[in-house]
Image (cartoon, rainbow, N blue to C red):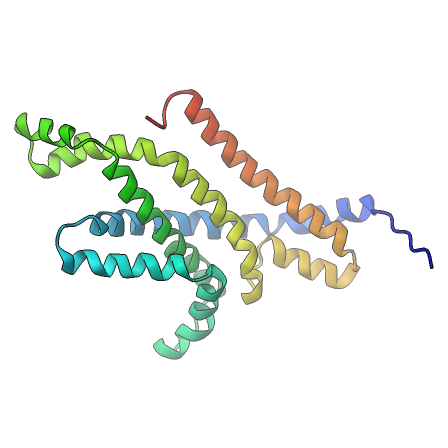
Amino acid sequence: MDVTFQFDWQAAIASIPYLLKGIPWTLLISFGGLAIGFIIGIVFGLLRINPIRLLRWPAIAYIEIFRGTPVLVQVLFIFYGLPQIIGGPINALTAGIAAIALNAGAYISEIVRGGVQSIEKGQREAGLSLGLSRTQAFRYIIWPQALRRMIPALGNQGIVSIKDTSLFSVIGVGELVRQGQVYIATTFTALEVYFMVALMYLAITLSLSFALRLLERRGLVGQ
């Protein structure tokens, strides 16, 4: 039996207004989580290279745990498991932001570590010879250069985190995929809707990639 199928462009276009409702949630979860994750990454990245073992080993444990487990498992634990420990429910949006923050923070910690360690030791010594304290040498000499080198990797992590939000439909967050699932349940146009969902994710990530390339061309990132 011959089966023919035609892509319904009208159905795909008709889904756009509904899917657009999920973009603010996708951006809120991803960029909110990344902002918190960046702070976590700085703290644990610097602890990761601290010579004091009592500070270094907890940082290593955090990084390895959250880099070694899937973000889907992490958000399920936060949303379903953690409430049993704290004795109260956790909002789905809060769980999503927390999962992105903790997961991205682990990866950003390694980005921070690599960025700081990429700066030649002679620059710190030069700062100290000029009368700067270790803290001042780090703040005014090491960190600005390290941050500049970290930006491409931080941008890549941002793209990964944006795509990770697609997993959070399992806890009912109204992001792009969840909006698509609800729409499909009433229209039965899975192919067309998921095609548009993919295009919207692609538009978001390409915009971020373009912004990073623009920074690189202007010499604001890298070496």
